Length: 230
Image (tube, rainbow, N blue to C red; front, side):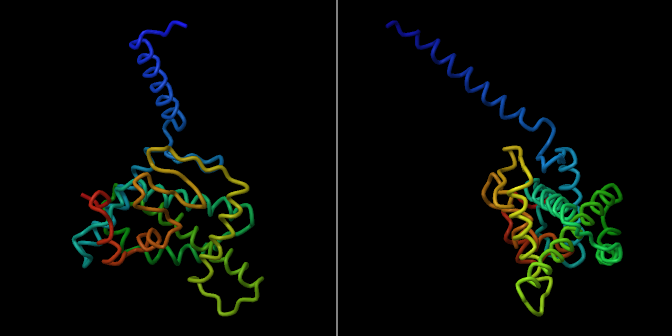
């Protein structure tokens, strides 16, 4: 049996590797992720990440440490966007809809922060925080119902939200396809696992702590340098 020249074998291997590389890139043309039928556009992701980074920078100027959150880090921003969309899909399927009064009250607590950020970031930040508030309220109600069925007493948001996330994620596993551009990590068990391995998603306690209007100094300090706003 005659072997092909070494050079030819190398060329074939290189061509195969290139084809696989191109195939991976084309899986999410223009999208950072897809959640069911909803696409999260990479350009929108960048806008959201920049807006949240700007908000954290404003916090540092009003008493927060100079060490700023890396909301310009797209992995964390993408985790928040995926989490909000999953809660929205679950809420729509289960008939869970926060009242406008609840949403208004939550957004009112953000007024000072929104007023402090540059105007170019304000609308994107407001929309993102509104979706995040809706996600939290939906999970709180889902968890409350679940805990009441189990006979739990003295239910609080702190106990209801984790219970809501648990039932939501079980539903997601059966009903929603989530696909993430490999550049940003992988999705499993209701979480975006960042490619770097340093962050898990908005479902995690760390990311939810960072989603607060004023994250704690310890949360800010815990972020790697690559995940802090410049």
